[in-house]
Image (cartoon, rainbow, N blue to C red; front, side, top):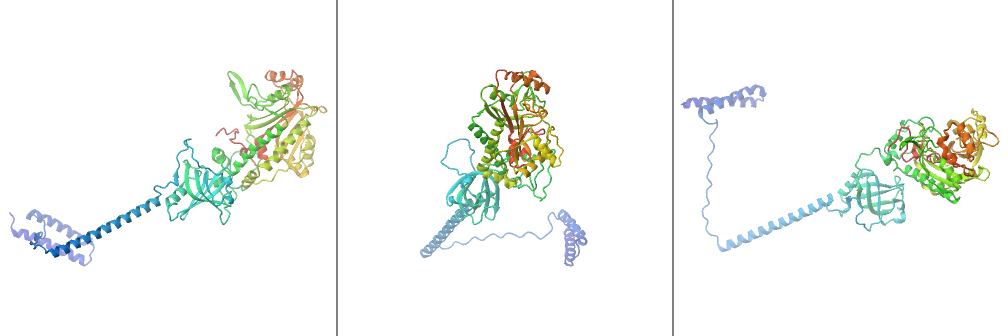
Length: 611
């Protein structure tokens, strides 16, 4: 057993080391100097505990027992009454505080819920439209939003083109087809427009489909970003009908930006895009076509295809008034439509077949051999031409016409002249808004045309080219370049972008073309041009079967493949003529667009077969 002397010696040692550390700290010596002393002191303290059986330090203080209060004398009745009143007052005060606290918490909760839009039904994602119960709601077309509706509540549906959060408000641009309107939504004091609602609107993905309810107002300044510039909608309700979930392939603002410079319309088309000279972002043609369903939403494209639709209506309207009958001919045929080799071939139950290059042979059968006399057709035309240009497609929409004549193919030309003038007049009269929307993005000059249509012979056209220094023989086919040059010459000389030219060399026309009665090297054929590019090719057709056979042999065509066609003329055929129009090319040239892909809904060229 250790003596007290040893325990005290260790304690004294600990005290001495502690004083050294205390002195070192007082002198602000670095820790590195006194840390070894601290280590030694800790070791000595451990030795102390081993020797003494307890930790080094003063003994813990004894806890003093709390004295129990002496029994007090019972309070007097007066004191008891006073104490009870005091307790009751205190309890009432606490109850009042609790009630005030509960009311304050209730108001704060209501405010928080109001700010968060809890329970609000004037914004959010709408239920999926699944043809359930029909409501009494009435939608207003954005095109009808005008100052006359000021103060009226309206409901509109469209794509959310843009949504911007500015301060405590949201500004939106909602677009439907060609038209757009601005909507504004600001927080208000009564909570009907909550911060959550404003945040919800501003956070919706662009191009989502939305329903917007609000009051029409007239702004101080025109809204330049919208077509409905003289009105805006003060939003009271905003719901998302269908949210755009995928990443947008491009911004609509970029897709709608006006052309910086006109794309060339000559040479091979590669799809490559050059940076814009003004440095602004524009969407390239191939990116547009890869995402055609989005590209078609632009006002310019909406207008282009509405104009294209109108051309179809005007085509039918004019010909129906002239007693034409609409026909529908097969697009699956044996052999090639016109004896050519540039056809899409396929297997027809073990027999070779192809997609029709044109309805040519069947429309002749219908008009001249079947007694209908005047027929027309609109439908797809297929050409397996590996032409990567800005004016060719592998599938396009053909507008074809065939009619019987009495004496001269000029009768056909007169109908075509009336037809095109009717179409041009109709577009200018019925599509004024669409023309301006196209012009905003793709500037162009109005088409100039004469009444009646200017007519030149092929020889006269070649002569005009030679007079302008262009090498062109009367019996050689016109190149695309020379066609465009001729178009400029005609525009300068006659003041028209639209003209026809007849008496083409027989060698450059199809086998069924009637030869010229005076010059066997020429033919009773013709082309129509817009801005120096062909949009119609036609001719008087041969209606004598033996002459058809003679011309087919000259072309090296297998007579077996056209046997049914030739036989259709053996039972009495009327003299006739006609022509085929390329719809997409008419639209392209009327609007002076540089690329036929801009006027084809879903273009098919040698490098594109989707979407």
